[in-house]
Image (cartoon, rainbow, N blue to C red):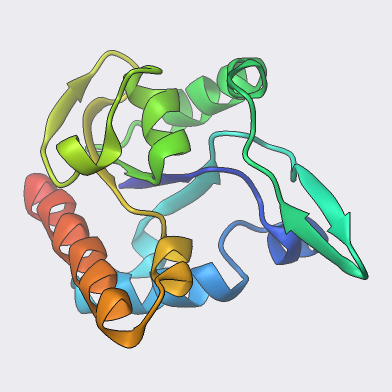
Length: 159
């Protein structure tokens, strides 16, 4: 299983590893709850650089442009080619659009096993950071449940 996120976040950029910040902690828990060992998945991002803007002393994430997604695509294709995953999980709309095309609608198509010319079989789901950004505890529980359910679909596709 190969998991594709949007781009490195602040902590990922500083540490040089994907999903090591707060969203990574959510992803770790969701993988465990879905019965997937993190050691059994390959983690990467569609865009390889951290695009940000300063806010005081903090570096705040900025959504990458389509041109940035296209510029990073050769690296993503090489990773998919080297790993040869049975299923690719797209975490968030940017990752899904980089795998499935620019017209992909995440919330309309999430949780479905889909054919992808780049990835073979793909499943799109929300990004773990969406759980963190949910406005209240009930919305966070709902978002987290969606993430876990979609990861289980990907795991079942491999089994």
